[in-house]
Length: 154
Image 1 (cartoon, one colour):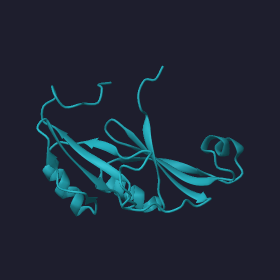
Image 2 (image 1 turned 45 degrees about the horizontal axis):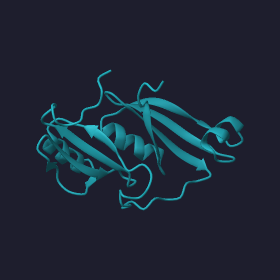
Image 3 (image 1 turned 180 degrees about the horizontal axis):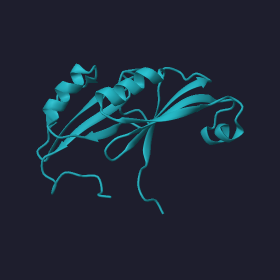
Image 4 (image 1 turned 135 degrees about the vertical axis):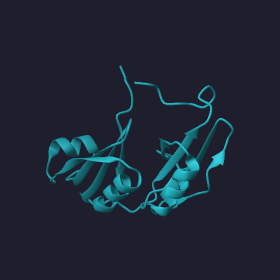
């Protein structure tokens, strides 16, 4: 039985700058982490990469976790920081906010880039932005809970 989504994982090229962004700008709490060295057959089997080694950190938000990985071996290929969200695979994760216009300005000041200012869609407003590595993050404010989709209550 699936009970919900536990976390979203993001591969990043620089763990320290990723932790600063996700904690200092987005407000996640750093729960700590660790690393695994190359030659661990269990981790290699799970991630599907031979001779893998990585640093990892778990971050906690109010109702979600983000797991960060910086692969040291083999190093990952850089992603186009302006990749289009219609490419196959995961496109973004969404953060529900209050006062989207204020949050947009705060995140801009924190170094986040956006495709456009928040767009009002009637029952909600949203926009897509990017972390320092080009990963897409949506910010989303609900105005009418009877119409807009909300995450399930725990």
